[in-house]
Amino acid sequence: MSRSGQSHILAIGGGSFRPSARYGFIEASGLLRYGLDLTGQDRPRLGLLATATGDDAEWLLKMYGAFREWDVELSHLTVFPMPNVDDPREWILSQDMIYVSGGSVANLAALWRLHGLDEAFEEAWRAGVVLSGQSAGALCWHVGGNTDSFGPALRPWADGLALLPHSCGVHYDSDPQRRELLHASVASGELPDGYAADEGVGLHYVGTEFIQAVSVRQGACAYRVEHDGADGVKEFRIEPRLLTS
Image 1 (cartoon, rainbow, N blue to C red):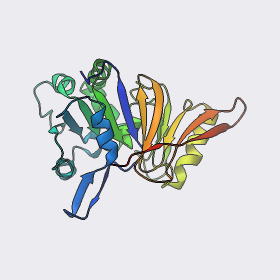
Image 2 (image 1 turned 90 degrees about the horizontal axis):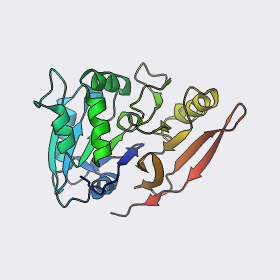
Image 3 (image 1 turned 135 degrees about the vertical axis):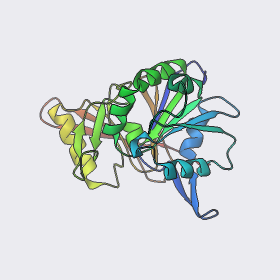
């Protein structure tokens, strides 16, 4: 286990990776170091998924390259054109941390359920595997959020795995549609109360409880969004802990 006996989810609003001037490629940010530290392992097994991009091979290669100097044991799981491992459940349970990339969260959820990965992820989470991801890879662990899975105009989406009984907002300060629609979705009851993250911010949950926000960007924030009991919402700013490494 992670393997602290606790169930961790790190939902990242954006900024898991950054351009690398040194390599002309990308490198993993301190948000992923924070997630790996939660595993309690000296050389954690990190499993990568790019289901939300249709298992794009170029993006998987970039993610492998982003950890080139990190002491991690990397592998990945794909479902196109068929699973690349004999037993996806066994692979998921064998990891110390899972990272799920952005893309189409609606397609991701449909494919995970088709292959029984939703149940495997819940089992792994309860066993102490750290679940993490950005954008679609953050929304998927929640009840839902707002997504461009259906077109450039965002739509509310409430078909997540719901390991976390909250809504989730991602890219909160970089996409002007995000805040307004999350507020409207919570106000209408389409989505439950929840949390949102700016670019460079991660939301850390232990079990189903929000513990803290962490950030690699000075001035970036997290937010709690709640129904106000009438026809609107209340938004509370959460100051994240700034990661210096």
